[in-house]
Length: 256
Ligand code: BTN
Image (cartoon, rainbow, N blue to C red; front, side, top):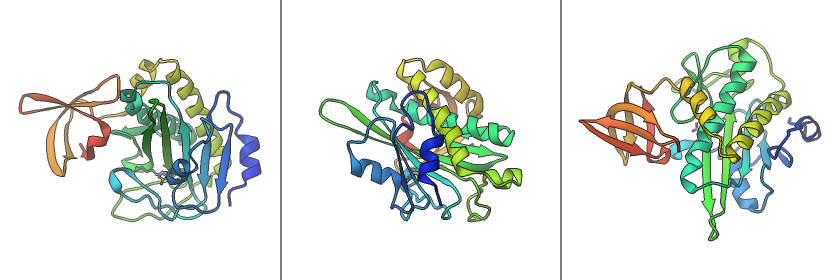
């Protein structure tokens, strides 16, 4: 079980993420709950021991055993143009990857746009959902699923966890604290408009640029060469001499 008092005491972050924490034994999805509650302060974190309807990217499910992992959502209200929201998902993946690398001491990669991968197996995923109101205030919910102490996964999906990688049990409160601190620092930098360094770090972890990629767009499987990810997090792909710019939400099942 997650100890809500301990989590609240331990998560001493500097800026806004983690100042308000909601802990659930069971919920349908922390992302769904974040939008349902609506007026939560910026930086609120919702964390659950178990989700009955965990959501993944591209309409997929996120399944995780009860009591073993980190399943959380962070509520953000970025002061930024809507187009920059794609960068937030890269920022979240970079913060998770840095945390995983620090905890495992293993090289940690990012598979575009925001799967965190160690030794070719996925350890974490990020689902970013955004809603805007009439005043153009964006509420962004960053959903993060990090496999911590789970050791059995569906064989169809090559997955791993902190425990499988290190043969150690991890304290989820400590793991969560480490992750929230990194997210908090990186989001503070993002809010100041200084995104170049984060994007540089993200690109260094993402081995896709320059490779031929196969991906799904509008229900069709396409192929092309990944040219770059630009300063707002869009992917440029060259195919048959033409360069096309894709938002992260426009493509899925990227393989390379
Ligand atoms: C993916 O890789 O497909 C993204 C997975 C995101 C899963 C997390 S778990 C916490 C939060 N709540 C959800 O319903 N999904 C995200």
